Length: 227
Image 1 (cartoon, one colour):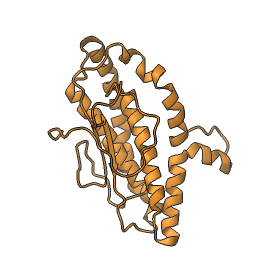
Image 2: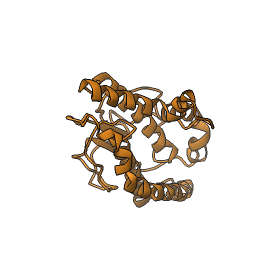
Image 3: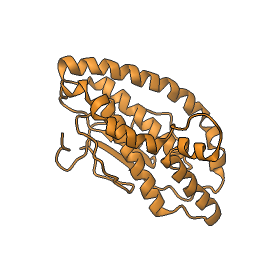
């Protein structure tokens, strides 16, 4: 299904938040331990909610709004944590513990709630139709390394996004500058991943484009009341 009008069903925005500490990135994984614990349980709930939504869409062609808002919130929370850490290292502002919109935070995500969804597509889009994207996203986010501890295996399992984020923050540490073109590329890669995540979670029938939309901003869903 094509994108509706000039607005995209999934909007991912980011701002390079400077000045950045040259060395805080070395300990961010420790600072984020509380977020990792919460997100572990949130993603379990995300899976359960998606299964419930599957049957709701199958029988009613609608994604119940409370379930939809919860899953959007989990994606938002994950994007903020990733932006703070290995998905970008592009802010030193600690992510809020929040499922809602945080318009002042430099990483933002929104998904337009669909009035109706296809009952037929819900049976195949999350696995069959999304397979080409899963292959691409697997390269972006990694996790493909199996066993061993060689540098080559680590490089693959880390994923392209993480590797580029480390290159950017190391450049920042030694040159005091986060490469702007690299930030645009990293944001575009994350945008691709998040679009696929929303599609696979049945939140839209709009097939994610095979397109790298680089840069921090894009035209997203029409504004809705705060969730």
